[in-house]
Image 1 (tube, each protein chain N blue to C red):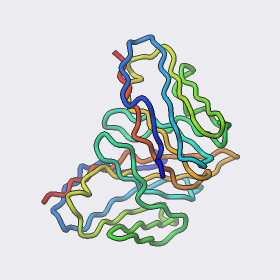
Image 2: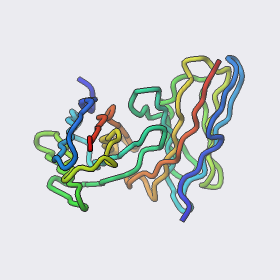
Image 3: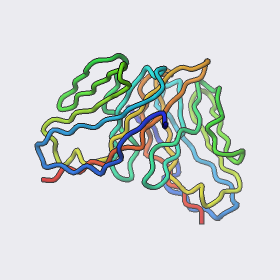
Length: 113
Length: 113
């Protein structure tokens, strides 16, 4: 079956612009996760969804970051007024249920110039 | 002390060698333990998923969890050049109604032909 997909695969944007990143999880997976991975660094957990709800938003780096999920399916991560330090690969993962193994998408490589 | 510690390497071994990758953790609440493999410019790929202490084997890969020592390992037997990648440990727990997810920073492995 289809895996986790993310779009766009690459995004170059100017500092100060808003960007929207999309994640399509594996069908039927109730849990969805967003991570950030800076060059040469490990995974930084941002937020997770159980269904359409995000119980804990404390991992989001700043109030410029927001995320939503609809229909227990697609999720979008929005970064407002992008900064150069936002440049990273943003990875999405989904799992059948919370605490189950996660399957990752290929990521969106964001470059803020 | 960081919640999850993983030696970043790099680790370089000859083809056919047995590889040992390790992580230590400090939070005894972690219950689920995972190993991911990440090739360059790709999303992480789940290799092993374990819940309890003990060993779990899958082909050339063996995952080991020692909850008493807060120590997990991944062994790769008969290593191949195609095993060259970054290996990330990950662990999760349910805390106060919220899921806590933490990844190690990853160990970069090179298997030389």
